[in-house]
Figure 1 (cartoon, rainbow, N blue to C red):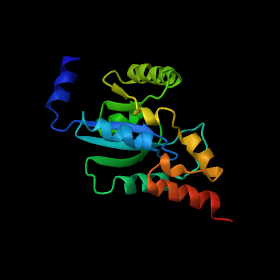
Figure 2: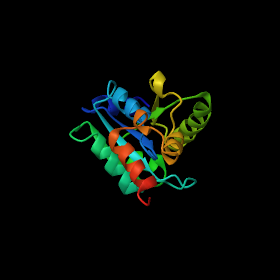
Figure 3: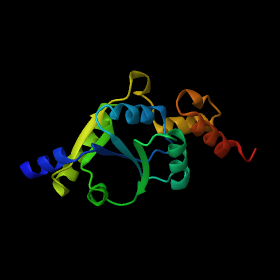
Figure 4: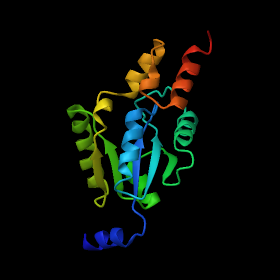
Amino acid sequence: MVRQRLEFMERKERLAVYPGSFDPVTNGHVDIIERSLKFIDRLIVSVTHHPTKKPFFSFKERMEMLREIFKGRDEIIVEYFDGLLVDYLKKRGVYLVIRGLRAVSDFDYEFQMVLTNRKLLPQIETIFLTPREEYLYLSSSAVKEIARLNGPVEKFVPEVVAKKLKEKFFSNL
């Protein structure tokens, strides 16, 4: 355990992974990304495959949107991974995970995942951040429903995402 801490402390760059489906990325996600950079030097925003979800946007679309949002920001790296988070972390040599929490229901799920991941890879540490108050209720599912009903998604997502949502829902009209 002491050796692991020393290895982390000797690392010149503080690096973390923020995994998620980002389908689509919301202002809540952007808030967590921006605020996590107060604690670390660089953040890998990792677009994941969620086997129980059918994504609205393809991996390519989600990664393109994230890269557009954070264009010119060398401290933010956008990547994709499929499989176990612990395998991805080992491969990248990163053992710090950032997760966002909106509600108590999020905590129950996230707490289970932290304990499971820690059992699989003991050196993992997780930092939970809550989004700013105006984004506490915001979810990607809610944003998609608002967009589907032609509502004003611009309040909830970056501009590039709002455009992509409108293109997806209304390109055939």
